[in-house]
Structure formats: C-alpha cells, structure tokens
Image (cartoon, rainbow, N blue to C red; front, side, top):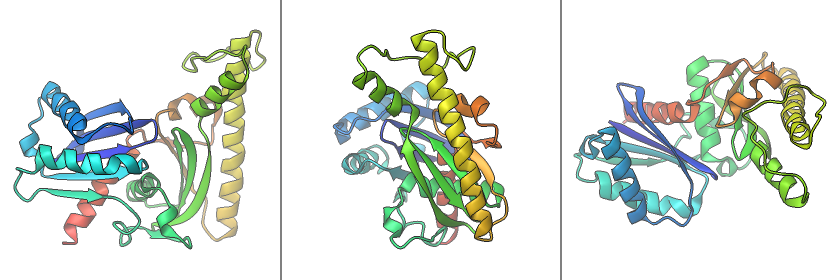
Length: 267
C-alpha cells in the first residue's frame, strides 16, 4: 500500500494507492505550525475512520512547497509506518526525479515539487506536449514536451488570493462564493459584478495565456500542446476557459504514484 501526500500552501491532499488506484483521499487545511505528534494523531484518526490499517503502508511519497512542514511530516510518517517491513519514504525534488523528467532551466531546484509531479503525471497519462494549468493558491502554467521535458511556465495569483486582496483593500466589497455563477456578464449588484469580474476576467486571461504559451511552444518546434487543468478551483473556470481540453482533478496524486512506480522499477 502506498501513501501519497502533496503539501500545498493552502491545502494538503493525501491519498492511499492500492492496485495503482486511489482508494482513499483526504483534503485538509495546511497549517505550518503543526507538529509531528499532531500530524500523527490526525492521520491515525483519518485512517481509522476509513478503515485503513497503518501497518499495510509500505511506502510514502511526499511533495511539498511548505519547507517548515517537511520535517514534521517525515517524523510523522516514521512514527506511523516505520514498523512496516522495508518501509521507504521518498521526498520529491528536482534531484529525486532527475532521471524521470528533464528540467530545461538553468536552476532546476527552483521548480516547485508539485509542478514537477504534475508534469510527470501529465506526460505519462498522455505522452504528448502539454500545458498543465494548476488552479490552486497560485495558478501555475507548466509546459511539458512529448519527451518528458519541463520547459518552464508561469505563476499568477489564484482566484481566492485575488478575491481576498480585493475584499481586504476595498472596505465595501464582501467575501463571495464563486460556486454560484453570475447570470450575466454585466453585474447588476455588487456581488454579481464581483463574480463576473473574477470568473469572466480570469477566464479571458487564461484563454489569452493559453494562446500565447501555445504559440511560443509552436515557434520552438513543439506541436500543439494538450491543455490540462487540475487543482481545487479548476472546475469553476471550465465554462469560462473553453480551450481547456481535459480536467485531471487527481493529477498530482497520480503523478506521485507514477514517480513511485518508476523509482521502484529502477532499483
């Protein structure tokens, strides 16, 4: 049994992989102050509620963009699973996956672990040039070649970050729920105007960036890329970004599983 963990800035997504499929999945708030003991208690309870036996977890694969939590997670996993025979823990970074994906940047260590994992996942699921758009705390574009090369990408503020800044800096603008879409582009109230501005505005921006990034990849000799969306907010923008061709909500967890398979097969 494989336990995969993606530690993000806002949420941490973890899952159990059995027979190469996700059998259990949890999405929890990331708290940089949590200790190894607190994490161990939380995951032991989650496992117990799901009927998962900690003793069956033979491997853990972690990707993280929150450095202050990494040590606590390593200690937590050591306490929960170290009694398992031949237990292994893999921390994903540019060095760990250097033989799996080629990072075509001057400093490969700059690329976030989650972006490499998404790139590996996209390549092995589709075997084509791809642009992976991850809608999280930040929205990232990651360009992947059909030779499993990481070509680079973009980073911009996520929807909730922009909404939070808007409400904080403009006293009369409230927090809003984007899951209820606006009826028209032209808002007829403050809330509908905010929804239209964010959803149609981000949709138009994503569409424009997809076009520009695709054109630049074409000019560099890469055929039209497959446009893949992932991340917690991806489903919200589908109706506003028609160029998105596929949504892979579990791309990061699938990528962590693929990394484990490839590293294990090369031992």
